[in-house]
Image (cartoon, rainbow, N blue to C red; front, side, top):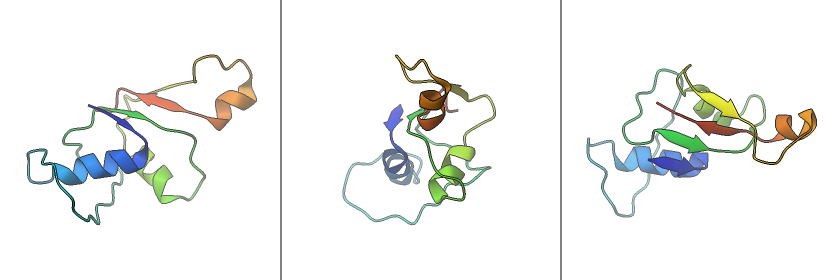
Length: 90
């Protein structure tokens, strides 16, 4: 499953905490940090996250086998550094 954005990733993982993905409205306090075992999301598309942010912590929880791919059509190092597409999450 591909999550588009870290908020979508958190929502999907929270909805699957019981071992099965369930639809519905709910609140969550899920905090994804390194060592987290992903239940349903196996890909993430996201933009660049600032240092010392909780979103950067979530992205750093992705396995070491994660590949970061520059956005399609970017040619400069500056453009590549400002936006990251992550594939192959888990």
